[in-house]
Structure formats: structure tokens, C-alpha cells
Length: 600
Image (cartoon, rainbow, N blue to C red; front, top):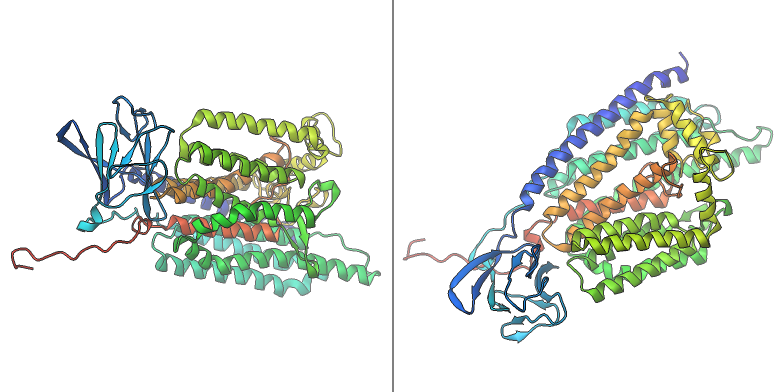
């Protein structure tokens, strides 16, 4: 039997392994989310308010505290006071960087702390007295009296069967690729096996070590990243070496140069993945300890626009692709700073929306974001706008509950899209290609049409690794990689990839609802939404549901900067997830229990 026949038969095993692993991970994620949603109903432990009334001191009761607690007359307020003079959203008590703060939410809202008026964020300490209307609230730090902090629910157990399926997929895919590398590519077999072996070693090493040294490590999320990276590694090796058309052997210089170019392309991809895995524990440790992320948000305010500006000045790219996003470095290496700018953008977003920001803070962030979006327009990097704008709206809606304003911002984002269409011929070509997709084949939609034909050829189970025809699809390894995936692995695997990105969002969102500080909560929502939005935009553009944007599919598409940035983002997500409730608070010295009546 030929290798093509073996690959054709192996497609059923590949599809079965990926689909079953995705279903198992989704089941674990849904069960874990239900558990965390129940736990999220618990208030903060170790802190509470004692509420009394100045008109009736005998009426006193304890009020629960959450990491963001609104006091006001509104029905959605966590502590509701309906007397005259109390605004709908009068004041807020929130936790940030281990410290509790008191903030007036509306201008003219009278609020007192220990007899003094408060007009800005003010730190709270044990026994502070807060005056609001006729109510008095005493802030109690119950840790001083030995009150225990409730531990988070343990992260869901891993799925051992999903791990075995992933390893079997990688092993069988590696063996198949080993034999498919024939002719001029045969000398590259050892390098291919070393890349696969290094990935297996690092991924399994961290899977064995990290859960034991980092309490609460999310094994399901790590397994999901592992499976996506395996699919990407197999697919990129196939696209790089199998079925490539080489120059005539008589032209030795061009012949050898082309082989070296292809080999270097795969080494960059595999090297970025291995580098990301190598530094993954460090990234997790930074996100988990020391609150360095909160401090990096200040740097992100400056570095985010600086990265876009540097890309505009130093970047280069093919005019046919529309964008100039790659900075060329020595030795043929390219760097895409815009991928790392997304991480910084999410950090700033999380910092601003760590609690309900004031109107002034919202306007300042809006101006900063518009400045960055303007730089993205100039590149143009419209794919980043299509990702970061929805992510911003998601975090804004969740952290402020201002849904009317969210709708107005969504309308404003649509206006930005209209401006982009009017100003940039590149956008006009993409829109025209999308609108004429079912009428004719032209230079603007040819890429999508060929991609859809590849999806149709693949059917449910695909044609087998190496049996497809990606050579006719422009940018098959990057922008259109989902079409190649659907052709060679099948639509069942394509749908499973969508499920895996849903799993990532579920794990991030479920951790966000139980986070005990606003920064962690908003960052988890933002980072998880980045992965999900990128996947939806890529797959939607590839299948003709939305205009093609040029965004890459995380962990699967070609791109060294992209995959390194995504592994770093995943490391930050994994690290912030493991922050415990006890670590969320400023440390205090809890007094030792005293003996009672001389008896210890």
C-alpha cells in the first residue's frame, strides 16, 4: 500500500482521536464551570461590613462583601439604601492589589470616612467607619481574629484519556510525516523528529511538574493548548515539506536555497513553540505572584502605541496582503510586534476595568484605545481591531453592567468600520470580494473560493495528511490554514477545533467569576476572549461568513511571533487562574490565640 493510501486510512483514526479528546475536554469544562458558578455565590471571606442606622442604633446587621460591592438606591446595588440623598450608584468598595478601597461613584455623592468627606479612592483598614445617608458601615477585617479564608474549589481533574489520544495523534502523525519526507527532504527527518521530541518532552515535563508545584493549576486548559499545538505542529510540517514544488535540479543554487528557506520556516515555527513552552513556568510564576502584571499595565499604556508606531515605521510586507506588520531583523528573521501589543492592550484593559471606573477614567481609556485603533488603521491591521474591539466591549459590559453604553459603543465600532471602508482601498477590496463571493470568481475572493472548495473536498473525515491540494490556496499555511485543516483532517476535526477554543473561553470565564479581585477577573475575561475571537474571526473569514481579515488561527497557523505571543498569553491565563483568595489580600499579622482560663 502506498503512503497516500495509508494516510487516507489514518484519517479515521486522526478524526476519532481529536473529536473524542475535544468532547472529553468540553465535558470537563462544563462540569467545572457549574462548580465554580456555585462557588461564586459565596462572598469574600474574612471581610464584611457592620451596618447600623444613626437614627436607631439597635438596628445593626452584617453585610457581605464581594471584590466589588456597590452601595446605592439602585435595584442592582449589592447593598441597597433607599433613603433620600442616596444616589443609584452612590459608592463602591473594591479590592485591588491586596488593598480595599472606598470610592464615590457619582459627582456630588456625599460619603464620609471616619468623619471626613471622601472625594477620591481611599484605603480602608479595620474598624474604619463609613457614613452614607443615615447609615453607618464599619469595615471589619476578620482575619485579625483568626477567621479563615475559604479556599477556591479545586481545578477539575485532568482527562487521562484525552492525554493519551493527544500523544497517539502526535506519534502517529510524526511517523507518517517521517516517511512522507522523501527525496530532497529526507535529510531533514532528524530535525523534524528532534522538534517533535522536544515538544513532547517539554509538554509532558510541565504536565507532570506544574500541577504539583502550583496549586490550582488548570490541567484542562493546559491539555487544550497541548492538543491545539499538536494539530498545528503536524499541519505546519506537512505544509512546509510535503508536496512542495521545487526548482529544477539543474539549478543547484535555487534548488538548495528553496530547501533551506522551507527548513528555516519550519524551524522558526517549531522554535517559537519550544521557546514558549520553555518559558511557560516563568510566565505562570510572574502572573501568579508579586502582582507584576498590575505594574506592567502602566508600561503597557506607553508600549502598546509604541509597538504599533514602530511597526508602522519599520514594518514591511507585500502590497497584495494590504498590511505592513513584519519588522525584518538580521539572518532573515521577522518580528511581529503587533502580536505582543495585544497582550499589553489586555493588561491595560484589565487595569482600567479592575472595578467600575469613573466617567473620567472611561473617557481617558476611550481616547487611549482610539489612538491605538488609529495606529492600527494606518498599518492597516484591521484584524487586530476586529479582535480587540469586541474583547473591550465584553470586559466593559461584564465589569460595569452598563449595557446601554455597551450598545452605543458597539454602534460606534460599526461607524469605525464604515470609516475604514471609506478610507482604505484594501478594505474595499476585501468587502467587495466577500459580497461577490457567490456571483463570480475574481482576484478579491479567489482565496476564499479556493478555501471553500478545499473544505468541500475534505468532507467529514478529510482526504488524509498529505493528500490535499493546498498549493492552489494563497497563504494556505497562515490565513487559510483552517481550509487545509478541513480538507485533510475533515470537517469533524474542524468543528472540534472550534470546540477547543470554546473550552478555552469556558475555562477563563469560569475562573473569572470566582476571582477575588477585579484585575484578575477582567484579565481572565479579556485573555480568554482574545483566543475565542481570533478563532471565530479566522474560521468565519475562511468559510465566507465574514470578510477575510488576515488574522491567524492560534497555535495552528504559521507565524513565530504569533505562536510565541499566544503561548505567553496562555501562560498569563494559567497563572492568573491560580491566584488564591488568601493571596488577593494585603498580608496582616494574625494574633496568636490566647489561652482561656490558663488552659491551652
